Amino acid sequence: MYQQMLRKIRLNGQSESTLANYGRSLAHLSLYFECTPLALSDEQINDYLLLLRDRQNPSLSYFKHTVYGLRYSFRLVGREDRAIRLPSIKRLNSLPVVLSREECRRLFRSSKLLKHRILLTLAYSAGLRISEVVNLRQADIDFDRMQIHIRQSKYNKDRYVPLSRYMAQGLKKYYDGCSPKEWVFNGHGPGSPFSQRGAQWVMKSCVKSAGITKKVSMHTLRHSYATHLLEDGLDLYSIQKLLGHAHVSTTLVYLHVAKTLPQRAHSPLDTLYPQTDAVKT
Image (cartoon, rainbow, N blue to C red; front, side, top):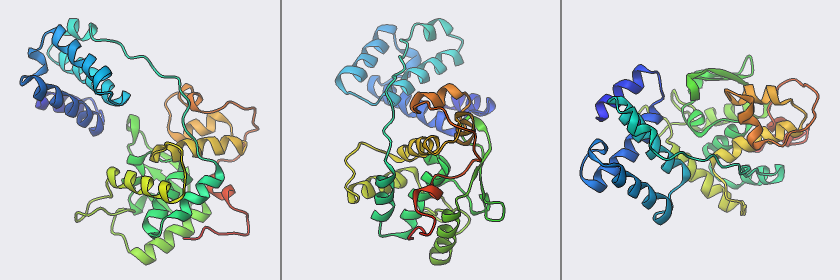
């Protein structure tokens, strides 16, 4: 069943993270009942989903991956009737947590390792998803055109975002001091990029060192990037394109709408510090 799902997802051009999320959630379900999901009754599936939601209190994303993975597997074998009967998932309308500019400055100062400071600062300066920042190659950083090339991210789309002048200085200093190979941030294995789990650990550790009490993650830097750009006067349409959102409605979910005049796209890192200062890296 997993091999069938793997072939279908790759043929459809869907991301590897989709395969990993669906596969992981269905593996847990199969281990729980000691059989494949296709052999389960509707009652067994509903009991398991109720257990996930009420007793184990999982994250909403894990619950969604279980439901969507089940729908995908049933449709894969032509059982649309069973896929339709699975419970619908309500979209939460909660606003994201956003760091203030002062909290961003404290966060970037909190790490003693240059690599970690550059990792967090780069994620904020370009509004990158965690998968995007850890999978950046050095060839994706264009110092001449002051742009960052984000390749085949969510929705299998490429995009360019501005490279902050402060970030360019920090990256060059990081390259000279740490000598990374191929990837901007190397992982533990030869020729491998830094892991997403490692990036989350860096964020958690630096948040604690900075004395920030908000419940944040790496994605909080992306939310903060968008919010600070809006406060700097950039219009929502430009922010949507910089973030790589397919629809502007996604951008509106976590941005406070404000009347702004169109401005040239830039990185909020350039307005985080006074013009005469440089980021201490």
